[in-house]
Image 1: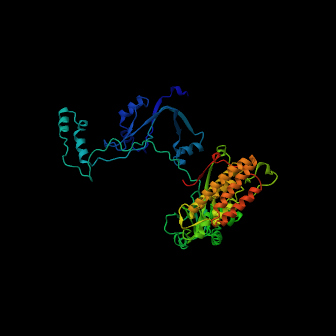
Image 2 (image 1 turned 60 degrees about the vertical axis):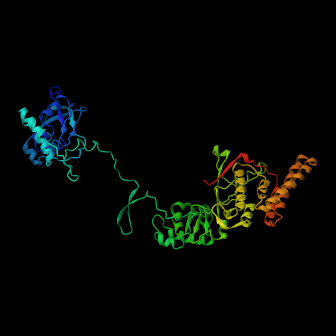
Image 3 (image 1 turned 135 degrees about the vertical axis):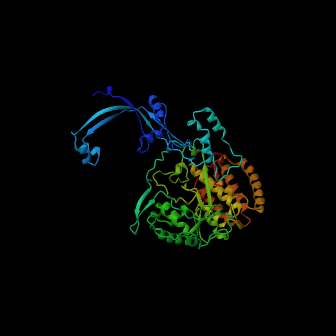
Length: 531
């Protein structure tokens, strides 16, 4: 049978369970509305009113589509066969494949569907004001005589009284919600959630992506006091071994032992000296969660970014000055080219470098003035450079700790910082440095008496330099200038500077080992982490 002779029809999909065909047609606006939609090929939309007796009920507007065609089939099968399968047509056709006939009845070329969400509904059936509107404004529906319609409309009155806030009687707005299509929330199972079985055999869901809470106690320089040893017991959960951190208790015990030996640590120092190879690799997942049970951390001040044993306030005792930290941030020309510190680079002249010798493995928290460290933060006690170590050991101390310089005087800390900067930049750029540059920093006066002595020595050395310049060659002049600087430093150290003379002896000894090039201060720029 050819489909060309089969009639074309419009299919209207009613979203409700239709038991009364006449009632379903009424919810769609009646037969007239259906006729207009069918004759327009679906261009005139239908309005589905779930409560057709209420004029203020918000309808659902239909949408039409002509994509795709369906065929309406007429299937004939005996009632007795259908009864054998409980009225299930599909099972009947599958069981009796040759006992039925199929005939095409129509081709559906237009579908009218309701895919929008229903709006919020507000019933006005019990509203007195809407009832009066219905009997007056809408009276034309049942009164054919015009004069009666006009009289009914004029009978509509509005109350002058203030409406009640609890019983506000008025028609609802044309629409409550502007959302007609449901959101696509893309609901799916969280891939980080897994079902685990605990020790009791119960199954529960665990989100493995949740970051474990870190109970670190942070102290600022302005805080009046530091937490004592009872802080962890009173404020932290009871430490216990878990599936995520089975070594928790062992790590806490190890840290307590290390903090008894040394009360203040940086993270790098703790990793290099206190932890074994296995614990270094699980710092982020194990060790850092055990530290709050043993120590607190400083957010500002000379001990910034260090872990300090509970009950220890380094601001109260000068013996904790050696645990102060200094941070250096480098911005050099080579940084723009992507150069970064990798292996340690010894501070030597190019002709002294032996490529056959392996690089020295220096811990990242140690600064020896010879090898470029991977870290940029150092505790004063971890500086092994001879000159700097002497300054740390015998530098001038204050009566009260300072927020910037700690227990050391400003002049001492200035010298330490400048010398470290000088050597760091030389190592960073692969350049050499003369120890006379360090001597010029050390010779700077530390108090008023030393300022006067340094000025007199500088004037004397300048006069002697002019006389020697007339009688020496260019090479002899360079050697004489070095002696003049050493002489000036010696003049400064006459006033009880025994340790300063020892530093100068170290510098003279290093100068005798070989000539070193001078790094011009204009060739680099270095910043402290003060911002």
